[in-house]
Image (cartoon, rainbow, N blue to C red; front, side):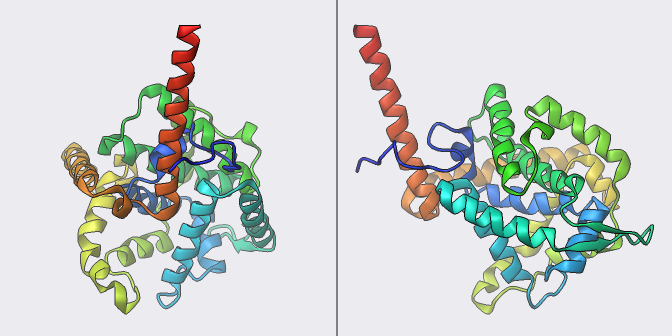
Length: 289
């Protein structure tokens, strides 16, 4: 089946590194890792805890599902679909404020520092897990991924010019921010709940697997992040996490694509193959002319 390469593919498309990375099942670990990184910025965590259902065990799963759907649309949706979810998120954030529990001051939830921290937590986590799992990515691909994600940053209201555009810039960003973050009470509570999530009955197997998943996710965190949570930051944990991620990724590659990928990611894989085929044909045509 031939896909239409000229269709509206939204922010990224079949030529992007983002599409090559984001559909891999192992990236679920990256998404959870991102939440733990994001929670280490107290204003971000306070603003989230005070304005959302994240801290309510009865509603947290539904809230998580909405976040997953937002990321899905942002990654694979058409321009119109991305603009629609972006408007909704920006409008919601613009109406919310948080209370700084250390100073007693209020702050807007959509403060650029908060938005940027959340964005970089996603980018770093997805990229780190993908590379350690063995998803084929060169250093240039990694830089392209970080650069492409500035388009995603714009969806939530950030100016792309203010967002790191390479792996080196992302590392510099974290070097600066590490002096301003710590694990507040709400962050530590979130870490504990990760090991015993309140999920619908039909997802009982996920609840049973949560402790093992939680150990893996924590092990993928940077050493400095683990230490902020009061956990060991040992090199052996890094090695064990990398080996486990590689094993998981290799295992999923044995599964047929129609079962391995979600529908949007499966369509993206087909488009990528069509795109690569068209590039090959174009190259052969140029060489023959």
